[in-house]
Image 1 (cartoon, rainbow, N blue to C red):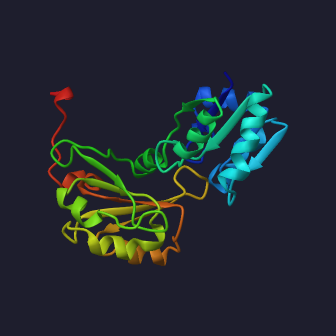
Image 2 (cartoon, rainbow, N blue to C red):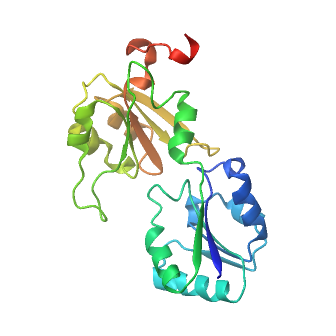
Image 3 (spheres, rainbow, N blue to C red):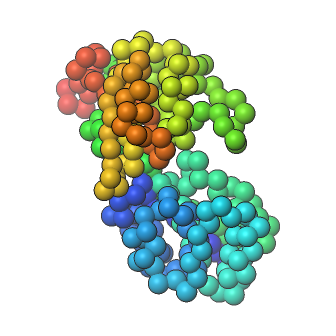
Length: 238
């Protein structure tokens, strides 16, 4: 049975794609990639005879090509940004491929979530502060209602995808104290990476002043300031 590989390209830095992902990319004969969300250096490293930018295209424009090429024996790679499991919209593609009796294999990637925490030099879970991580997004074209207000009642670490243009709206829904640390990371791991730090009360204004309106994550929680948030040493080192 033909196989199509869904590969996580990582957050941006081409050095952060996995070894397995790079191996498949280098051998791909057909490459369908997620537009500017994927570093062009990675696309350039592929010698695929067909390279298709999927940005703005419907499934009906993408999937038939993948099916035809896989059925003809080509090694087909569908390259997604970050990790395909987080806001990657891969399930609907896989369902259509499986209906055509094509096996799908997912190769995980490094999410921008983890590139952002690395850039911030922090853990997302930290003893005495938060043992819980909530990953979510604001409502939009594909989500009629979000649960930001309800989720924030847990006072856990929260990370927001797809909301860089709505930071003021997001922060007004949060139940955290206004002084809770917050940070916005733009283009985590890319050469033009930018970090803005603040609090729930002022992070939206600070990000706006920095000109950040897209391609950024919002991180909220005491983990961003462990010295002032009751951090306790891990029992691993006790």
